[in-house]
Image (cartoon, rainbow, N blue to C red; front, top):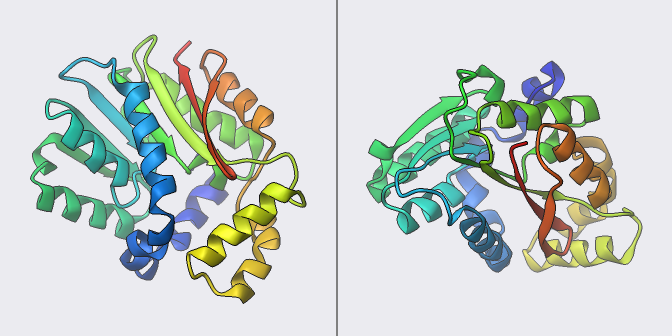
Length: 233
């Protein structure tokens, strides 16, 4: 991501073995993903028929493929620091017949041309991996800098007011439902504090706004996953 430590560490989190199993690992929780994709579609539905959309942390391409099917005139730039994840994204796009409408960039948003050319952007479950709050603000600023004035962003991250509260317990149940080993789930709180920056929702919204956007609207929540839409200021 935007700080050198985060950008160096993130590809290791999503290496070849992670990329190979990423799409199937949480299949039992697919309805949570599908709901987020639907809201993302609604947020971006006012874009023009020939929109160019920036997908930050595109991963294996879930929202890209979903949006490309819904809007056959849109073009996409998929950005991800993990080569294996982006390779899988490209392969899925080729299989779906939409690769000609896509550009694939292995790296971070700050590496892109800084011209404001995008009509909208997504950053789903991405900024949570930027542990430093200043760097996280810079992450959103890098997106804002590349959006046309008034362009919408749909972003989502894990967020909660307390890692010891009932929402966290429900989140653990979700992972158990997804057949994640119980011993891994037992270590979740420690993992979240060390590798994922889980902040209160209001704090995440403040970072988005500080990154060059109008006050974000909290438009989505399933358990600890919170989603906001915001327009470039």
